[in-house]
Image (tube, rainbow over the protein chains, first blue to last red):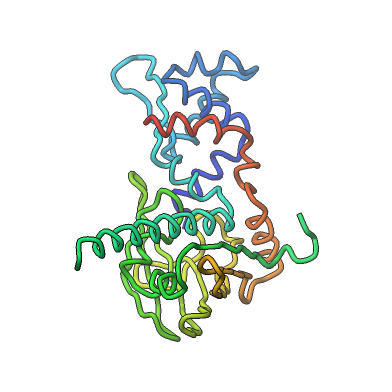
Length: 116
Length: 168
């Protein structure tokens, strides 16, 4: 079974789709505008957008005839959490452990000062 | 990257706190929840059995995304010096699961953390390596250990997007 994250990763594996995502990060736009900087036909761009839509990365407006494309940040954020290394997972955790221990020690000190 | 032993991952951290305090942070449910886990994920302990053979089963929640689960299977606990456990992704019921992002990620990682006293506090040393992994899985872990692996594959896109996401 393909999880949503699998779809996000395979959608982002393509450089054209990454460029589309990068463009949409600056704001929503139409398929025609998206196609302009690429030397690709509009149907090809539409195909790429469909892949991004299936991954939940892009949504399209219903109201306007042009149906502008919009970036959906949630699945992208989830994917980004997994692009770090095992090292980063532990470095980040150890950072938080340090902060947690520091704040605990401070609370302890305060408690001691107030004579408890 | 050192070619010598890329399949073993090691990280050391100096903490300005006594060993007993550091040990507590690893051995108590409420404390573990506060610091362990991927950045940006809220980790919730569903099971926390700090004994050999016991499980730490947790959910990892990111706003707007479906939750994921993971587990520690504790193998050895020697207070306050050493903890050995197998780490893997899990399903909702604490069963072992494949990584949500790849079929090639090793199912289980063997972790050993040791604590020793220093003049200023505690040295915490973690060593991790794939457990019972196939050749493909070993290679994947190697990539996972070299920092920024997947992000590199995606070029600068993620860097560009970080600001956007932070503002979103």
